[in-house]
Length: 68
Image (cartoon, rainbow, N blue to C red; front, side, top):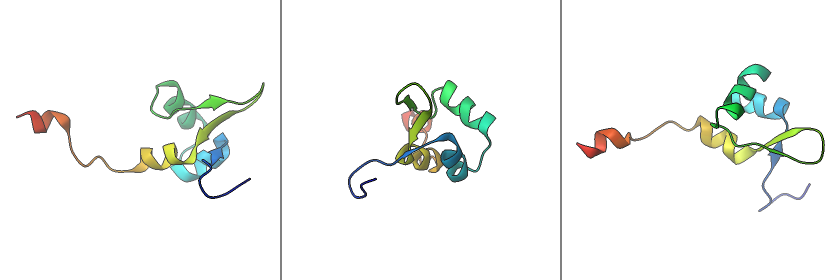
């Protein structure tokens, strides 16, 4: 797979390793829309590595507190 500007896609096992979660929690994140996923071909659910890492970033500000 080409490195550089290409987005790295991960299967559920690879994503779980980055996220530090199990298969059930991974699918919960996908099903509730917190982790975007896509299918390639008939089998397999894939996620982008950048989306996994983004999910791990701490929330730095809260929109509700900025409105006051």
